Length: 206
Image (cartoon, rainbow, N blue to C red; front, side):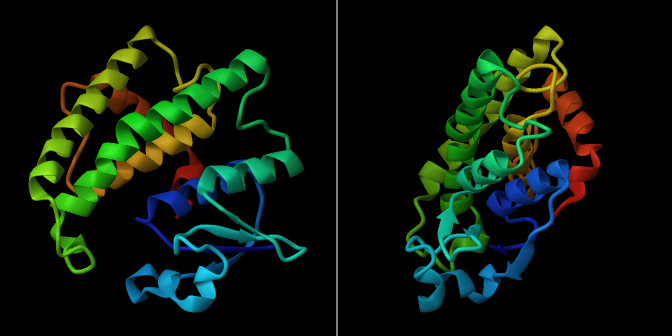
């Protein structure tokens, strides 16, 4: 297998890197340099017509895009240790928090990056700056909401075990910091959670 991927701070590839580190799996990587627009090259677009990384090429020459789909593929091949839940309720909680992290935090974070960050202006000259600035407020609100949810004393996002939900949120928060949208100072539960998960060896998988 081959994983077409990019290094930190690219957040979607990082989700797969952390997942693989947690599972103790190694996959051949093909460094796809986004700064050089390699992910938009015609040969890469044949692997993923959206021109995005990561993409997994399976041993039989098939291609899987989207970070969560790639991780679920590996989860089916290597179920232990489980990263998507240990029983039906646990799996539902992991799925719930993955979707919450993506919709509540990743979505506005992406709009800040696309519409309010000067580094994307080269490829997106028609930025909607007002929408980007508005998205900063939505993003900060999402962080404060997650902080309140973590106020029940749970160790990890979906319960007692570190799961894919934690990986999704960690990568989102770290990319938010990269675009200068840090966790609010008053969000102490979220800051404590971030410190816990960042201390795991897998978090250094870039």
